[in-house]
Image (cartoon, rainbow, N blue to C red; front, side, top):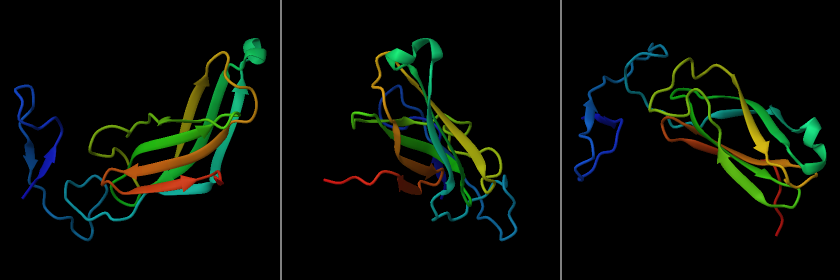
Length: 160
């Protein structure tokens, strides 16, 4: 019994050998940071009331659409900690733009810190010169934890 971690594992010469870790089950009184294995079936939590989104126009390039889309929100997880955060932004012409938020725990198999503590996350998406002028909207956020649980949060009702 073990857990495969950290690296490409396969059958080509450049692949790495798997690293197997034998971790004990977590005790009922396990503290964050204890090296043990526990079950995690719940997705990360988003404080929907904390979500803000705004566009800051560059003063020197206001007429040409350059600026920054800023989205902030608070999130936490019960055990494994927040990992990947995917966003989708809708431009004034109705086109969707998606990507991933880069944050302290975005990469790697282990969360650093207290996963149960509410943390403020901030997305800064630079808009290039010539970007459409008008209202940019936060379409959705997908929060993933380090255990693979995911929660999709839709902010724009899409009608067909």
